[in-house]
Length: 71
Image (cartoon, rainbow, N blue to C red):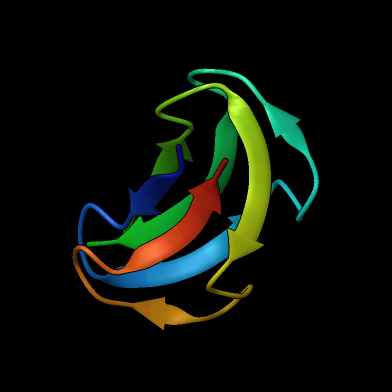
């Protein structure tokens, strides 16, 4: 079963802390989203393996946009 990790708000990706194929555990920090002049860490909602990353460093994302998928 795959889990989609989405952006909680609009902003800019300022750090990517994982890559495709990485094993992650619940609450591992995956990336950092800058929004409203604050850095907001994005955490893994479940254990699994990163199967796809749908954003890149420096990208502007919208609220609820899928950032990555964990299998």
